[in-house]
Image (cartoon, rainbow, N blue to C red; front, side, top):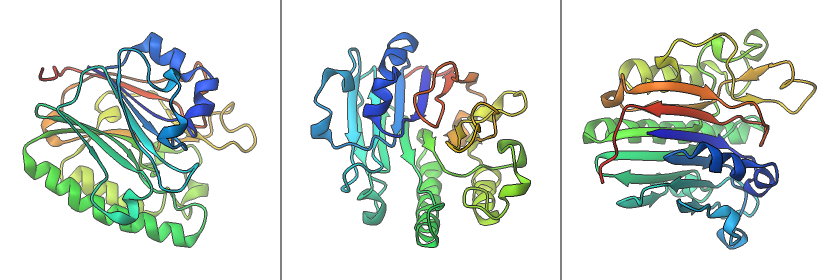
Length: 259
């Protein structure tokens, strides 16, 4: 089972840059997309409903903002939109597909980098999601939560960690939240299940030559419920083409979906 997560920073812009051609060649089992920045009525073209996939969108109420999507080669048993909180669900940040005992989720956690008000929104979302994640663990289901979590966890997940200790995305409270998720709840950072080379990142600022110089952050994740530990077969960050300021994260799993 191959799953891709990609923050496309505008699905129509990514489409113009060849994102859907790449999907057609890569043929993931599930594609988890964040920041569609479009309303469903703007995505009637067949490009946004690729052949061989069942496509599901959850838009933000605000036009041109946020939004998540799932493309599934197998028809899900159920699709759930929203994380159960009006504040965040109005921003189109969560969509879940259920296949038997497996849930695959496209999640777009808020960024707090624009102003302090948005950082507080991010903290509220983190608090809500931690409760939800504990419920997921207790449910007995298998979960793969893919997306842009907008937090770099450790020093090795950010090139210039010393210069970002006081910046949103690398704040002590944010990093401690991931510590709790991994160390106390037992969720798994799928990418780190396999030994990686240094300087593996999924997002680069558009300022300067950050991408060319690989001055990046790893803020896009596949996070697994404890039941899926040991199921990762291979990982990859696709950088041969640039569809947005993020790179797609591809992970293969030793897992067969229920039919």
